[in-house]
Image (cartoon, helix red, strand yellow):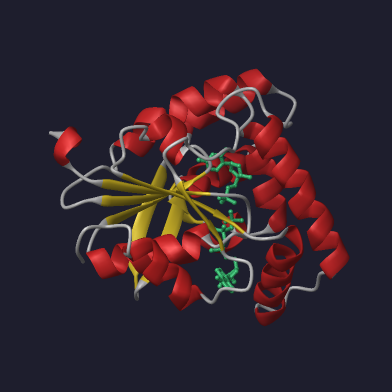
Length: 223
Ligand SMILES: Nc1ncnc2c1ncn2[C@@H]1O[C@H](COP(=O)(O)OP(=O)(O)OP(=O)(O)O)[C@@H](O)[C@H]1O
Ligand SMILES: Nc1ccn([C@H]2C[C@H](O)[C@@H](COP(=O)(O)O)O2)c(=O)n1
Protein backbone atom coordinates (compact mmCIF):
# COMPACT_ATOMS: atom_id res chain seq x y z
CA UNK A 1 0.00 0.00 0.00
CA UNK A 2 2.72 2.52 1.06
CA UNK A 3 4.53 2.08 -2.26
CA UNK A 4 1.72 3.87 -4.04
CA UNK A 5 1.49 6.74 -1.57
CA UNK A 6 3.71 9.50 -3.02
CA UNK A 7 6.38 11.09 -0.88
CA UNK A 8 8.28 14.33 -1.45
CA UNK A 9 11.43 14.53 0.68
CA UNK A 10 13.02 17.89 1.48
CA UNK A 11 16.41 17.59 3.14
CA UNK A 12 19.05 20.19 3.84
CA UNK A 13 21.08 21.98 6.49
CA UNK A 14 19.72 24.13 9.30
CA UNK A 15 18.09 27.35 8.10
CA UNK A 16 17.92 26.33 4.44
CA UNK A 17 14.14 26.72 4.68
CA UNK A 18 13.09 23.05 4.78
CA UNK A 19 10.35 23.54 7.36
CA UNK A 20 8.90 26.69 5.77
CA UNK A 21 8.94 25.30 2.24
CA UNK A 22 7.69 21.83 3.26
CA UNK A 23 4.71 23.22 5.15
CA UNK A 24 3.69 25.50 2.27
CA UNK A 25 4.14 22.78 -0.35
CA UNK A 26 2.18 20.27 1.77
CA UNK A 27 -0.65 22.82 2.11
CA UNK A 28 -0.72 23.43 -1.64
CA UNK A 29 -0.78 19.71 -2.38
CA UNK A 30 -3.17 18.81 0.46
CA UNK A 31 -0.61 16.25 1.67
CA UNK A 32 0.51 15.31 5.17
CA UNK A 33 3.65 16.87 6.62
CA UNK A 34 6.41 15.29 8.70
CA UNK A 35 8.83 17.54 10.61
CA UNK A 36 11.37 14.83 11.45
CA UNK A 37 13.67 17.28 13.24
CA UNK A 38 10.88 17.85 15.77
CA UNK A 39 11.17 14.20 16.83
CA UNK A 40 14.90 14.56 17.58
CA UNK A 41 14.27 17.89 19.28
CA UNK A 42 11.46 16.35 21.37
CA UNK A 43 13.72 13.56 22.62
CA UNK A 44 16.43 16.12 23.43
CA UNK A 45 13.98 18.28 25.36
CA UNK A 46 12.49 15.29 27.21
CA UNK A 47 16.02 14.16 28.11
CA UNK A 48 16.71 17.65 29.47
CA UNK A 49 13.56 17.52 31.61
CA UNK A 50 14.80 14.23 33.05
CA UNK A 51 18.28 15.60 33.67
CA UNK A 52 19.89 13.06 31.32
CA UNK A 53 23.43 13.89 30.29
CA UNK A 54 24.02 14.09 26.52
CA UNK A 55 26.96 11.69 26.98
CA UNK A 56 24.77 9.02 28.59
CA UNK A 57 23.82 7.13 25.43
CA UNK A 58 22.03 4.26 27.16
CA UNK A 59 19.73 6.68 29.01
CA UNK A 60 19.11 8.66 25.80
CA UNK A 61 18.10 5.52 23.93
CA UNK A 62 15.72 4.56 26.75
CA UNK A 63 14.35 8.11 26.71
CA UNK A 64 13.75 7.86 22.93
CA UNK A 65 11.57 4.78 23.43
CA UNK A 66 9.74 6.32 26.42
CA UNK A 67 9.01 9.77 24.98
CA UNK A 68 5.47 10.30 23.68
CA UNK A 69 5.36 12.82 20.84
CA UNK A 70 2.13 14.11 19.29
CA UNK A 71 1.63 16.66 16.52
CA UNK A 72 -1.57 18.70 16.90
CA UNK A 73 -3.06 21.24 14.53
CA UNK A 74 -4.23 24.32 16.49
CA UNK A 75 -5.39 27.55 14.83
CA UNK A 76 -3.59 26.69 11.60
CA UNK A 77 -0.36 26.02 13.53
CA UNK A 78 1.38 22.74 14.21
CA UNK A 79 1.93 22.22 17.94
CA UNK A 80 4.22 19.53 19.30
CA UNK A 81 3.15 17.86 22.54
CA UNK A 82 5.87 15.96 24.40
CA UNK A 83 4.79 13.62 27.18
CA UNK A 84 1.51 15.55 27.40
CA UNK A 85 3.16 19.01 27.54
CA UNK A 86 2.97 21.54 24.68
CA UNK A 87 6.71 21.99 24.04
CA UNK A 88 6.45 23.76 20.65
CA UNK A 89 8.27 26.93 21.73
CA UNK A 90 10.97 25.13 23.72
CA UNK A 91 11.62 22.84 20.74
CA UNK A 92 12.44 25.79 18.47
CA UNK A 93 15.29 27.15 20.65
CA UNK A 94 18.92 26.92 19.51
CA UNK A 95 19.65 24.87 22.67
CA UNK A 96 17.06 22.27 21.64
CA UNK A 97 18.50 22.23 18.09
CA UNK A 98 22.02 21.62 19.38
CA UNK A 99 20.82 18.85 21.75
CA UNK A 100 18.87 17.23 18.90
CA UNK A 101 21.93 17.33 16.67
CA UNK A 102 24.03 15.65 19.37
CA UNK A 103 21.59 12.83 20.13
CA UNK A 104 20.87 12.33 16.42
CA UNK A 105 24.41 10.98 16.06
CA UNK A 106 23.54 7.95 18.24
CA UNK A 107 22.68 5.04 15.91
CA UNK A 108 20.21 3.42 18.35
CA UNK A 109 18.29 6.68 18.70
CA UNK A 110 17.97 6.93 14.91
CA UNK A 111 16.87 3.29 14.69
CA UNK A 112 14.24 3.82 17.39
CA UNK A 113 12.73 6.74 15.46
CA UNK A 114 12.62 5.06 12.04
CA UNK A 115 9.16 3.51 12.20
CA UNK A 116 7.76 6.56 14.00
CA UNK A 117 8.63 8.55 10.88
CA UNK A 118 7.45 6.03 8.32
CA UNK A 119 3.91 5.91 9.75
CA UNK A 120 3.40 9.46 8.48
CA UNK A 121 3.21 8.05 4.96
CA UNK A 122 -0.55 8.24 4.58
CA UNK A 123 -2.84 9.00 1.60
CA UNK A 124 -2.98 11.21 -0.37
CA UNK A 125 0.77 11.87 0.10
CA UNK A 126 3.53 13.08 2.40
CA UNK A 127 6.02 15.92 2.42
CA UNK A 128 8.86 14.95 4.79
CA UNK A 129 11.58 17.35 5.93
CA UNK A 130 14.86 16.52 7.64
CA UNK A 131 18.40 15.36 6.98
CA UNK A 132 17.97 11.75 5.84
CA UNK A 133 14.44 11.67 4.43
CA UNK A 134 15.59 10.95 0.87
CA UNK A 135 18.56 8.75 1.79
CA UNK A 136 17.33 6.53 4.65
CA UNK A 137 13.72 6.98 5.73
CA UNK A 138 12.00 7.20 2.33
CA UNK A 139 14.68 6.11 -0.17
CA UNK A 140 11.91 5.13 -2.61
CA UNK A 141 10.31 8.61 -2.54
CA UNK A 142 9.10 9.71 -5.95
CA UNK A 143 10.33 13.28 -5.47
CA UNK A 144 13.45 14.40 -3.64
CA UNK A 145 14.78 17.89 -3.01
CA UNK A 146 17.96 19.05 -1.27
CA UNK A 147 17.75 22.69 -0.19
CA UNK A 148 20.85 24.72 0.52
CA UNK A 149 21.78 28.37 1.09
CA UNK A 150 25.04 30.00 2.10
CA UNK A 151 25.79 29.75 5.83
CA UNK A 152 25.79 33.57 6.04
CA UNK A 153 22.29 33.81 4.57
CA UNK A 154 21.01 31.02 6.81
CA UNK A 155 22.41 32.80 9.87
CA UNK A 156 20.76 36.05 8.74
CA UNK A 157 17.40 34.31 8.27
CA UNK A 158 17.63 32.80 11.74
CA UNK A 159 18.72 36.17 13.21
CA UNK A 160 15.68 37.88 11.72
CA UNK A 161 13.39 35.10 12.90
CA UNK A 162 14.71 35.24 16.48
CA UNK A 163 14.71 39.06 16.63
CA UNK A 164 11.05 39.02 15.56
CA UNK A 165 10.37 36.70 18.47
CA UNK A 166 12.20 39.05 20.82
CA UNK A 167 15.09 36.61 21.40
CA UNK A 168 18.40 38.42 21.81
CA UNK A 169 21.25 36.83 19.83
CA UNK A 170 24.25 37.92 17.78
CA UNK A 171 24.67 37.23 14.07
CA UNK A 172 28.24 36.00 14.60
CA UNK A 173 27.10 33.62 17.36
CA UNK A 174 24.35 32.22 15.13
CA UNK A 175 26.79 31.73 12.26
CA UNK A 176 29.12 29.81 14.59
CA UNK A 177 26.23 27.60 15.79
CA UNK A 178 25.05 26.94 12.23
CA UNK A 179 28.54 25.93 11.08
CA UNK A 180 28.98 23.67 14.12
CA UNK A 181 25.60 21.99 13.52
CA UNK A 182 26.35 21.56 9.78
CA UNK A 183 29.64 19.88 10.64
CA UNK A 184 28.11 17.54 13.25
CA UNK A 185 25.14 16.59 11.05
CA UNK A 186 27.30 16.01 7.97
CA UNK A 187 30.16 14.18 9.64
CA UNK A 188 28.31 11.66 11.81
CA UNK A 189 28.76 8.01 10.89
CA UNK A 190 25.06 7.11 10.59
CA UNK A 191 22.70 8.80 8.11
CA UNK A 192 24.83 11.93 7.68
CA UNK A 193 23.34 15.01 6.07
CA UNK A 194 23.89 14.58 2.35
CA UNK A 195 21.77 14.83 -0.79
CA UNK A 196 20.32 11.58 -2.12
CA UNK A 197 21.87 10.73 -5.49
CA UNK A 198 18.49 11.32 -7.14
CA UNK A 199 17.66 14.57 -5.29
CA UNK A 200 17.17 17.86 -7.10
CA UNK A 201 19.37 20.49 -5.47
CA UNK A 202 18.01 23.99 -5.03
CA UNK A 203 20.31 26.74 -3.79
CA UNK A 204 17.93 29.19 -2.13
CA UNK A 205 20.54 31.92 -1.52
CA UNK A 206 18.92 35.13 -2.68
CA UNK A 207 15.61 33.42 -3.53
CA UNK A 208 12.34 34.37 -1.86
CA UNK A 209 10.09 31.79 -0.20
CA UNK A 210 7.42 31.93 -2.94
CA UNK A 211 10.01 31.32 -5.67
CA UNK A 212 11.36 28.26 -3.88
CA UNK A 213 7.84 26.88 -3.33
CA UNK A 214 7.12 27.22 -7.05
CA UNK A 215 10.43 25.56 -7.98
CA UNK A 216 9.62 22.59 -5.75
CA UNK A 217 6.03 22.28 -6.99
CA UNK A 218 7.29 22.37 -10.57
CA UNK A 219 9.01 19.02 -9.93
CA UNK A 220 5.67 17.30 -9.42
CA UNK A 221 3.57 16.29 -12.42
CA UNK A 222 0.49 18.33 -11.54
CA UNK A 223 -0.80 20.27 -8.58
N1 LIG B 1 13.90 31.27 0.64
C1 LIG B 1 13.86 31.95 1.78
N2 LIG B 1 14.13 33.24 1.77
C2 LIG B 1 14.14 33.97 2.88
N3 LIG B 1 13.85 33.47 4.11
C3 LIG B 1 13.56 32.20 4.18
C4 LIG B 1 13.55 31.36 3.03
N4 LIG B 1 13.22 30.12 3.43
C5 LIG B 1 13.05 30.17 4.76
N5 LIG B 1 13.24 31.44 5.22
C6 LIG B 1 13.16 31.89 6.60
O1 LIG B 1 14.33 31.39 7.25
C7 LIG B 1 14.02 30.99 8.57
C8 LIG B 1 14.43 29.53 8.76
O2 LIG B 1 13.62 28.72 7.93
P1 LIG B 1 13.20 27.25 8.37
O3 LIG B 1 12.92 27.18 9.83
O4 LIG B 1 12.15 26.80 7.44
O5 LIG B 1 14.56 26.46 8.08
P2 LIG B 1 14.90 24.94 8.35
O6 LIG B 1 15.80 24.50 7.25
O7 LIG B 1 13.66 24.15 8.58
O8 LIG B 1 15.74 25.05 9.70
P3 LIG B 1 15.97 23.97 10.87
O9 LIG B 1 16.61 22.79 10.24
O10 LIG B 1 16.92 24.64 11.82
O11 LIG B 1 14.64 23.68 11.48
C9 LIG B 1 12.52 31.26 8.76
O12 LIG B 1 12.37 32.49 9.41
C10 LIG B 1 11.98 31.34 7.35
O13 LIG B 1 10.86 32.20 7.26
N1 LIG C 1 15.92 13.63 9.75
C1 LIG C 1 16.61 14.30 10.69
C2 LIG C 1 16.10 15.45 11.27
C3 LIG C 1 16.83 16.08 12.22
N2 LIG C 1 18.02 15.57 12.61
C4 LIG C 1 18.80 16.18 13.69
C5 LIG C 1 19.91 17.03 13.18
C6 LIG C 1 19.45 18.44 13.37
O1 LIG C 1 20.53 19.32 13.65
C7 LIG C 1 18.48 18.32 14.55
C8 LIG C 1 17.34 19.31 14.52
O2 LIG C 1 16.69 19.23 13.26
P1 LIG C 1 15.87 20.50 12.65
O3 LIG C 1 14.66 20.66 13.48
O4 LIG C 1 16.77 21.68 12.75
O5 LIG C 1 15.55 20.10 11.24
O6 LIG C 1 17.96 17.01 14.49
C9 LIG C 1 18.50 14.45 12.01
O7 LIG C 1 19.61 13.99 12.34
N3 LIG C 1 17.78 13.81 11.07
